[in-house]
Image (cartoon, rainbow, N blue to C red; front, side, top):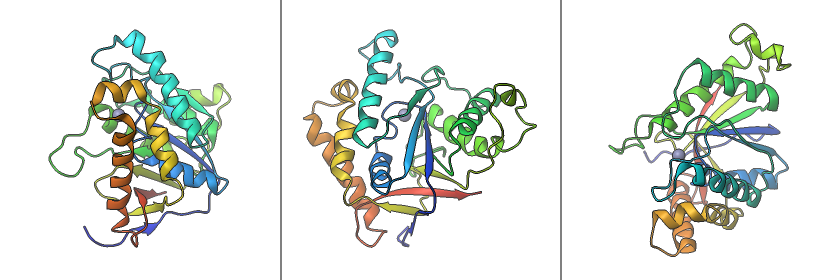
Length: 243
Ligand SMILES: [Zn+2]
């Protein structure tokens, strides 16, 4: 696993990032989102749930609005102002046609050239089992990139004015155990740290560490590890699926 990663394509303008939970993007990909924003690219976020089952000490009904608010704040730090929620149920997202239809509809609405999602593999690369929600959303996002362009798979979408969009050229999977590409995030790391730090309630429930030290340590360590395969530059990695 020591071969060098390739630079991510840069000849695109719009990306849609599709993940299961608030904080999924802030644990890594947000640094790349900030770097893309610096280049004038537009990124929107689509959250499949509000992460309402993510905090043991908070009832879902209280957690949902808090986590939504923290997600919007975290997105704003890296320049993302369009943040949408699909309201599937946290923890039990079902992979299947209903999820694919929702994601295909969003892709038709946003018309991105790049779809970003998170690790769809069974594990994180060792024997740490990935969550059911991440697997379901990652796989459905990879499928929906194609579904969005086929007028016959979900014909009902066109009745809502969502016409086929076959313009997705790549799906980039963040936090994959099999990365192929990377983005230099040298100038974006501080914003990535602050973006993760916006998930205050979640992080306070997760660790006794000082939240800022926790966020900084996570972001910097990940960027340095990735950089070892990217010419020593701090980086965020992706497994890239061209279409
Ligand atoms: Zn998650």
